Image 1 (spheres, rainbow, N blue to C red):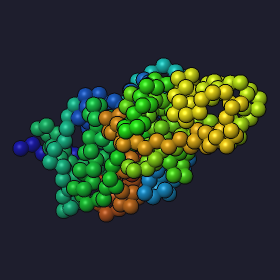
Image 2: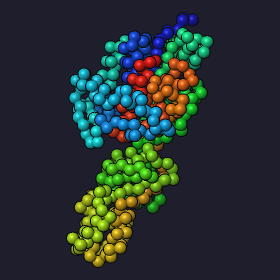
Image 3: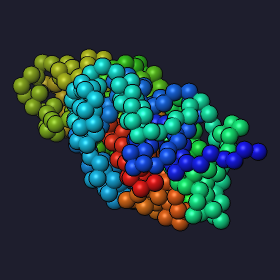
Length: 398
């Protein structure tokens, strides 16, 4: 049997975090191999941002990420910032633009980001093996000074001094996503925070199923869960609720909780009473129609049950309607799951990882980066910035 091929670093996963880590490690003179079971690199990058990749957010800050340890992401994010990635994009001459809320997108194609990362890896001498899955992954403690990590890749035996797991989470399984990172973590004794779909649409049932008649209608709202709120668009679907505001708040939601929607964002509680004084002859649906799509205005007015001209409605009933419109409760019966989730919340416990290097505290040379870690960003480029930052953190030392 032939002797195994030995590398300084083997990275499992050719997504954003894995490729960034590989390029950084390779530039340090490390012999690096990236392995991915998919037949092309960066598959999630390619579909992100409508094919234009929302590659970072200029408002990146630790408080825009969820984790059991809200301080864990501070180190990596502070050492590789959104501006650092923008500088890299600019060096490659990739044109980009800012959309709402600090979100940055390629002018042309997400493929430019993948090509850039692959070029960085090529320049750093990184080897990439695609369309192949590893098996028989193990660690030999007796070889800890040499190359303790071993595995098979087809007929080849491989060994590595460091192993970086960058295989992501199970969101969007049609892209080949799996929970492999969690299997590896558990194999080596690391804890895993229960994974759940995040940035995902809600499903509605029961009496709220009547809102399905609004499928395709969107409106500017404030979506709230507990003490957390987001003001962006909400979209009614044939199954429930979606849109940026809903995807954002979904990361904070737990089964059994209500989602509150403010259909009158920014307006004072007395707005309807003021409308009665200023435009007494109009109906509720007409008043609401000045703020939102007519179909939504009509449906909300019907559900509130106040017909006729505003002049004929008592102020107390208008005040009650205003209260409901400012905090309309929906009770999701679930979400659309990992199939429609943009990312995964939960993952490899940050309690078992170094926040500076992403290395397992008790397993030398084992690193976890990217979405597989219990760090989840807001919608709008934050999760890509975590991929870049965590990849750099591990690549600088692995």
